[in-house]
Amino acid sequence: MFDFVVFFPRAVAQGIPLLFGSTGEIVTEKSGNLNLGIPGVMYVGGICGVIGSFLYERSLSDPSMINPFLGIAIPTACCLLGSLLMGLLYCFLTVNLRANQNVTGLAMTTFGVGFGNFFGGSLIKLTGADVPTISLGNTSKLFRTTLPFAASTGAFGKLFLSFGFLAYLAIAIALIASYVLNHTRIGLQLRAVGEDPATADAAGINITRYKYIATCLGCMIAGLGGLYYVMDYANGIWSNDAFGDRGWLAIALVIFTIWRPSLSVPASILFGGLYILYLYIPTGRDLAVKELYKMLPYIVTIVVLVFSSLRNKRENQPPESLGLPYFREDR
Image (cartoon, rainbow, N blue to C red; front, side, top):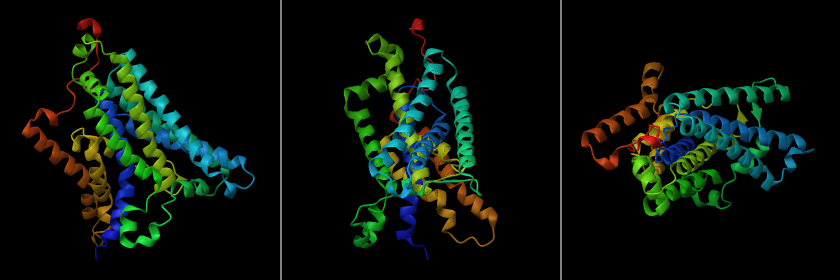
C-alpha cells in the first residue's frame, strides 16, 4: 500500500535542495545571467559548511557539548562565503571579461565538484575513518531539530512540522524572492536588466551592479541547498559525489516553473516526489522499469517546455537577454 504520510515528508526533504537551487538560479537569470554552474555552487556550499563544522567540532574537547548558536552559525557562514566567492568568480568572468556564459557555467560546475571532492577527501584522511565519509552528527542534530510539539500532532505534524529550519527558510526565501521580483522597484529594475540591458542602461540603471548582486545572491541561496543536503537530508554525512544530479534538476525546475519562484515551492516537492517515486512503486526485479521511473522529472520538464513553447506567451518565456553579454558601446 502507498503510504502518503510517509512519502510526502521524504518528497519534501528531497525537494528542498532543488528549491534552494532553483530559487537562486531564477534570481540570477532575471538579471540576464545564465549560470549553469549551480551544481558546482551547491557542491562548494556543502563542502564549505562541512569544513567549518568539522573544524569547530574538532576544536571542542567534547563535541557533544557543541554550542547551538555556533554549531549553526559557523557552517552557515562558511557555506554563504564559499557560494559568494563562486558568484563573484562567475560575474568577473562573464560581466567584466565577457566570457561565454554557457562555457563558464559548465567550467564552474566541474570546478565545484572537484573542489568538493578534493577537500572532502582531505578531511576524510584527517579523520582516519575506515569508510570514505565524514560524520558530523552533532551539528546535524542542530539543523534537523523540529518544532517541539510536532510529534504530538499526529499526521499533520508529520506532513508539515517534521522538518528542520532550513526547509522553512527555503520556502520563505522563494516567496520573498517572488514578491520582490513582481512587486518592488528593485525587482522591476532587475527584470529590465534581464530583458533589455541597453534600455535599462539608458534609463540610468547600473547594469553591472544588478548583475553582480543578483548572481552573487543567487549563488548564496543555491549554496544553502548543498548545506541542507549534507546537514539535514544526509544526517551530517559527507561522501564524495553524493549529490548526484540534484543541481541539474534544480536548473530543470527553473524551466518547469516558468521563472516564477513562488511556483518553485510546490514544483520542488513534485520533483522530489518524482525523484524517489521508484522506491515506493513495486517493480519487482525489473530494473528497466525503475530506470524509467527515475526519468520522470526530466520527462515532465520536457512536456512543460513543449506546451509553454506552443502557447508562446511572453510571460512564459525566459528573459530576452538571458545568456547574452552586454556591450555598452553597441547601445
